[in-house]
Amino acid sequence: MREFVVSVGGVVANRTARHAAPRSLAIAFAGTIAAGFLSVANAAETPRADVDVAPVLVKNIRQWDSFNGRVSAIEAVDVRPRVSGYVESISYREGDEVRRGDVLFTIDPRPYQAALDSAKARLERAQASVVLAKLRDQRAQRLLPSSAVSQEEVDSRHAGYLQSQADVLDAEASVSIANLNLEFTQVRAPIDGRAGRALLTVGNLAVADQTLLTSMVSQDPIYVDFDPDEQSYLRYSALARRGQQGTNGLPVRVGLANEDGYPHSGTVYFVDNKVDPTTGTIRLRAKLRNPDRRFTPGLFARVELADANEAQALLVDDKAVLTDQDRKYVYVLAADNTAQRKDVKLGRTAEGLRVVESGLAPGDKIIIGGLQRIYFSGAPVNPSEVSMVTATKAGAQL
Image (tube, rainbow, N blue to C red):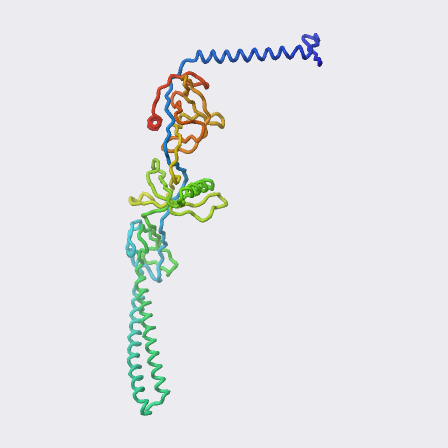
């Protein structure tokens, strides 16, 4: 048996552990009983709080993930001249939409017209040489039986005739090239789309295949590029495989920076062939219609990507979710009209409500209004039942 010494006002007293321990336990037990009675007394004295309750919404939904993206054109072309020369005129209004084949710039055509005329003259000369060479070849063929000409002369004249035919083909090719160069003095739109500002004004020298005259981008349809993280990509790929459908074709919703929600819809058009190891993301591309020209290449866009299939989910209003350090919880209406705390695990948002992955069951009634009057789990309440969807819309309007 161990002893200890207690000093009070200079008086030393010896106590044994067997006398001290029972007394400490008695004091602690009495304190616990007193706290319990106090809690019961508080609960009994607490007035019933008026609260709004709504049953958990059970619904088949398609869940969406949000990403940031950029608008890009399906076709984008830098317009450059195919022949060199001085710009003679600009035939479009900067920023306007043009059709494929419309003339944008005209380069001084006079040197190329002269080159075409010269090529045509050489062609005519070659054609005349063919006629003469043919006559000489035929004449030699007739004189050969009488030995009026040698076999060597006959062969020479026949070769000259064949050579003159080749000269005609060469001259014809020169005419075609000269004609093309003359056509290239009119710089035409290579695609349907919007033309940018003219980077070269009238009177400046344009160098073939080098000088940038303007740029063009197509308008409808349009691409929206975004980069899901690796985990999202793996989840969507797994869902797509289970649904026997590739990631391509998944529905996409898009909203611009000045728009509420996601008013534009499209589908996934392209999935890159590798994940960027530096960012842990993969490039996806959605394709959308753009008839009213709301989308302009380079704009920031908010993108939502949907699961392949619908699934049943439990939905609650975000206003009902409270936070206790790192835990999320809600108050559920018990059978005795008391508010009972339940910890929950939350998922993504869907249709303005929050998906509850665990912690609740169908039929649970969640307190969504009057939460500020509930101070502890088990508090008595006076419930008024409302619809989860109606309450959410009313909160959004406020």
